[in-house]
Structures are given as structure tokens and as C-alpha cells.
Length: 357
Image (cartoon, rainbow, N blue to C red; front, side, top):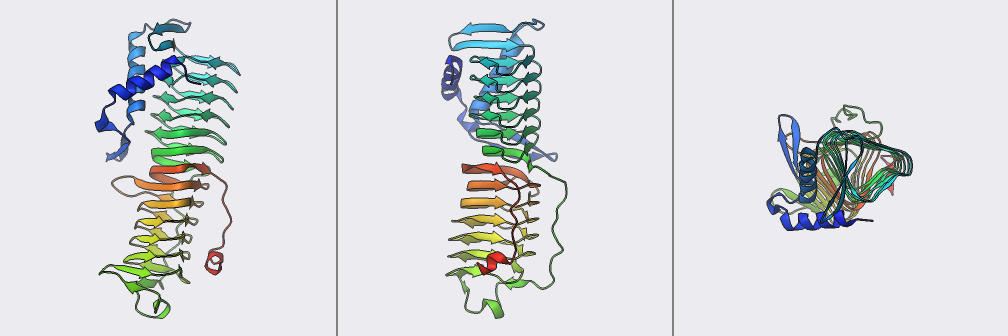
């Protein structure tokens, strides 16, 4: 439930937002990402800091300010018990800690670190420190953290989860959209599990053998398959490929250029994908695969255990209907979904099984 302050604030943002800053932009400078926030979040954090700078320090009791948009509560720190409820907007100069099953119906800004107790609920929250949301915490609209954001098992953010530091997802955590210099799941360890590349890769463009009669040229750098294409051995794709049906390739493949499919797209484990992968159906990258191009799927996009996504000079972009992230996944960039992203346990798969389906 949103109070008068939240409604008034949303209206103020709509009237005063700088449209040149609309949306989220990424920059790569001195090996660190710099972000430009959406207008609502940027305006809220700027105004919250202004309120705190104008309010005298040192008062142990929370200060309540009445203004035309509603009531505003300003506190030096927050350490509230289980089941605490607050309908007003809350600004905190120091640390914020709440017990289990608390409810904050108005927007919350914290200058220090945030620890949200299990099962607590928020409308939206921003912090200049780190944010740790315990199991089953629910954030209705958006969450922003200047440092690390950790969403533990079962925690959820209905809209955007944005961090200038990194985002850590526990099993069962759900988010509408994720933006951060590094997004990882449970069990993340640095490094990649990619296997050495096979010396006997099937080449595309094709010469003979398996490819005979399956592909036809479309221009100088594109080949087309009119049906399904299930490659029986590791492949090296050196040209753009359009598959009208489903496409799959086994472990150890190298995708140097773009693939577009009218159905599903499945890349086997320990493969390397440098091109853009686009599927009208589902898209799966199996265990240990590395990708540096963008991924787009109209259906479900699954990044299996140990998948890595990053490129030099900027973020990777991932867009899908639903996004499934298995353990030990790391993506440096922007993850956008229409049906939400969820961190799940790994699914056992056989690299050959999907070829025979």
C-alpha cells in the first residue's frame, strides 16, 4: 500500500524527470562500471540525501516532518523488532536493520548498510551502502544499492534490481530486471570451467560431409537452414547462420558469428559464443559455456551452472521471456525479462540427449 508521500513523490518525478537520462546506461572506465539510474530512482536518492543534509544530526528519536506530500520520518539509525510496520517514507542517516516480517509501505532510503529480516516487505528501497535481503524478503517495485546487493533464497524484487557494485542471487531469488557490473548466483567461484577446444571442429561455412544439402547461402556471409539443424560434433561457426527450426550443437563448439533460430537454440557445455544468439523459442547455454555477445530469447533462457558472460569494453545484454540462472553463473551486464528472472538449482543434462530428441 502506497501512502501520500509515495504518490506525491511519483508525481513529482513524472513532472521533473530529465528525459535525457531515461533508462539505464552503462559505461566502462578504469575497469569499473558507472551507471546512470532511471529518473525515478535518481531523483529519489538525490532528494533523500538533500533532506538528510538539511536535518540536524544527533537526535536519538526519529523526526517526523509533515509536508504537502505526506509525512516523512528521518532517523539516525534503525534497529526495529519483528513485525514492525511503517506507512510513511523513511530516510535513515546510518545503518538499517529490521527483524522478521516487518512492513514498510513507503519508500526507504538508507545512507548506510541495510539488513532486511526474513519475510519483510518493502515498497522500494535505495541505499548508499550494501543491501542484504534475507530469505523471502519482498521488494514490490525496485531496489538500488551503491555497493553489493545480496538477495538470499526466496527473496524477490518486482521491478529493477540495480547495483553499482554487484548483485548476488540465492537459490529461489526472483527479480524482474537486473543491472550491475557483476551478477552472480550461489556457489560463484572466479575463473571459467571451459574445456580445451577440440582440434577436429566441423567448419561453417560448409565444404562437404555432414553439411551437404542442409545449408544454402544467403549473401556473402550468411547461410540458411530451412528446417532443424542438430550438429553431431563440435562446430566452429565462422559466418552468420539462420535456422528456420531448432538448432543445437554439442560440447566444445565455437560460435564466432551470429545465430538466429525460428525455434529453440541449444549450445553444449564448455563452448565459446562470441556472436549474437537469437531464438524465437527457448535458448540454453550448457555448463561452463562462455559468451561475449548478446543473448535474446522470446521463450525461456537458461544459463546453466558455471556459465560466464562478459566482454571487454562494456556490458553484455541478455533479454528473454523468462530467465533461469543456475549456480555459479556470472554475468557482467544487463539482464532484462518480461516474465522475471529466477535463480535455481542446476538441472542435470546430457550433451547428447538433446541431439537425439
